[in-house]
Image (tube, one colour):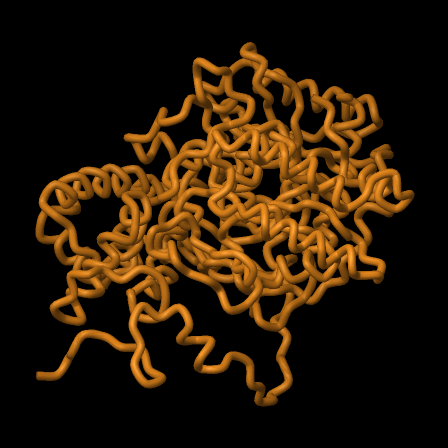
Length: 95
Length: 474
């Protein structure tokens, strides 16, 4: 078993998702079965194969290096759950 | 039910046989009659009436003036909220318009509403939405069927004739599979043809916008409208977009179709093998040469996809932290608590599953074994297609391994659910254009789909083959 209680807790922490005990158990089961299933990729010989990260066949064009003024801070803050004096507001982080 | 086509409607509007108001009131009526299908996450009659008012006072000529279009709720729209079918964005009102929807607005189309989808486009049945299932309009009363997914709301909106076309997005089959389930046309163009700017990101190396419509001609008109270069999407391709509709040509004489033997998989229903054979016979009669081809790494496409897509999703969805927009949990004693509770309460089960698996395969010590390995196999899959396209001009396969299945079936076993995408995922990994068209029915009279795949940016031939098969079937 690749994923145990410690591993799922570690991944959940990295993902910043709180899991309760029931959820942890379910995800341990799901993730192990998915990882067992993707193991079949090990059958494939990928020696000297370049990884494909960008499928785009065209050459990425450069854009003009000019400044522009699009969103105003007011617009950006419009959907904030909490804001204060032109800033996003979050719980206190420094004691 | 005979539905009017976009092409015909544009003629009727031009000759004043029908007014924009009359046309859209007809659609509004049907939308209200079909509320039980749960097609829309956001629908406002007032909003539609306002758009009609504005267009009536607009004397300019526009290509899609007055045409009712449904928008998958993954595209940011200024005039309507955008949720990605997630609680975490339930109160999000974009301050900008996506590239694709802006193009449709510029051409004068009317947005009838925002359609339901699997949460963040992660699913194949539109059953992971925070806003509930969409019901396939072709369901029998005693057995509600899934519309497919993730763009199930858009496919259902076209199938129930609630619009003349709809936008979708396709990462591993999210346009083609629901099109097949709902008996409509769905095209996913080449990766990079349509800008992804303003579309909530799922897996950025795979995501692509596309179109649902009643028929191939309509799809060719609408795809041309949403395609084009955009410097705000760094993967947007600088290519000339042809006039697909004007260039439609059902003469396929002398072309070669590739039939990949690896797509004959165990356990698919007889009827699906049958329509595949039927399609090949039709093409043969039209003078198309049949070439048996091999795409040897096909069986590895799904596991490759289910490493790459969750990995990219776990990174893309990191932005939903309860700070800048969307939902924030009330339990926020510290900043970390705020993140963890917001994401625990804001995301649904499937989205969390994919974030967790994606985080795992990218985490220290596992990156090479999973993510890098998958990217290498992806290269082999893309090379398979490149080799095949030296021997053939296009490829024909079934779209999905089944017809529409009952709602909630397959829900508990993620791998079984993932198998829905077995015929659509390989082309997604290779970035190729693909269309699904209705072609035949199963024993329960449910539609089945045929998929046509083309070379990069060869949407024209994909449309030509599709229109040729469609005309032979009518």
